Length: 392
Image (cartoon, rainbow, N blue to C red; front, side, top):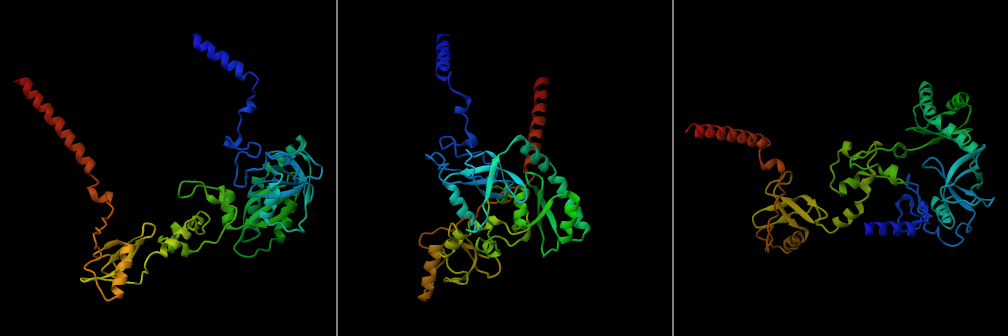
């Protein structure tokens, strides 16, 4: 009791004057700069590691503002507003104004502009003010119309016979303009569509074409790996993927397995292809055959990363397989060039590599059922013997 009373008084005295905000950490940043960190709600979130430097906010008047992902913009803080990451602001638009969230201020904005490759003669718009309640009400009203507008615009495009799909709609903050994101295989003449949409929704219409990968990133989903799609979580630039990436990694050229949810080749095939290409340079050519005293061996398959090669005595099917290391294969190739043939592929103390055990080859798949039957027989036999002992 004395200890518990002492501990309670200690806690009260030491934590009496501390606020809840002293312990609040946004985005799980722990010991790093909390000022420049925010909850990672989308793939465009960037940690401002210069946020704690003195006069960082005054280093530049340019501010990074984010709208509906993946749209960002860079605006001039001409009114010298005290802005921080997370502030909601009203910015200049054409026409009217738009509502966005400040995602970066200070020195790193210049690096972000350079990364975005904005042209020097690009028009720089201004930040009007911090968003008021009236601005937020208009913004919420405009956002609530996006889904219904998208569904209705799809039907309008279908009625006009246009070979296109409208994947998303984004309203401007003041509701005076709407951006329609669409995908199409060929060029589309949507001049009539713009007239119909403008008459129906009474807003200014902007059409923006996106690719299949960009559409998958906007929609999101779960990939075959069990994780969220890379295009919707962290990828901002898409590099072309070819079937050669699958060949380098010895992946089966099955279109159903190689295609992602966007019906294009999976972006993840590019992640490790460079490592496989470097490893392939350390393996012998597939066209070279190995000569031994008793047979001729043809290349069948290779474990590229572990540098293990499987050879077969038949050129078209796996017969008399032998798995050796790449170092041993190069030794035999050099011996063959000198006109010599070793006794076998596995020589100089090397043991033949055992094949990995297949679980289906271990036993009959009904072995568990037979075990249950044996247990039932034992129980029946035990009960019969007990009855005989009682009778005796």
